Image (cartoon, rainbow, N blue to C red):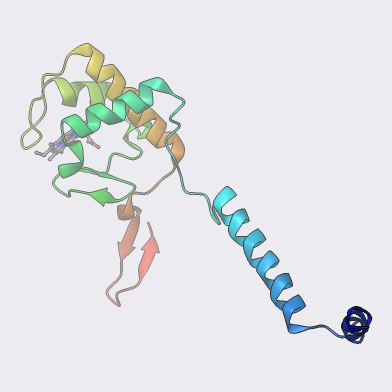
Length: 151
Ligand code: HEC
């Protein structure tokens, strides 16, 4: 009967790995790997804690006044002013300097004369940024042979 012979033809392959099996197996591995990447990035980057409302609102103030046009965070941004990633914890700087700069400025840093509410949010943002990593590229010396060395 045709049905029986069809089945016995299937069983002939029983002990060999058919291409369709390899294909299915590799597809499952590929999908599982893709899913694992979507669920957990391969390496984690420093991030701002968006659950901290002060810091995330402070980031909006940072964008509103375009601080990034003159300052860098993690080494990225404008180069007229210094990198502010770790200004919050820098010796003799920190919150008092941030407040002073935002109230009066020093040429060429403009005097923003910000209200206390915005200053407090920016301080919270820079505090959070400081906690998230160090990235001032100027901790590196560029040597005459083009290589870099930590200061
Ligand atoms: C037009 C360019 C410009 C903009 C825009 C600007 N700054 Fe500045 N800022 C500077 C310069 C230049 C300095 C360095 C002044 C000096 O020390 O002589 C500075 C210094 C600072 C300092 C002191 C840093 C240190 O290590 O001494 C802080 C804090 C600061 N700025 C915060 C901000 C914030 C926050 C904003 C956005 C609200 C901002 N700046 C916008 C140019 C700018």
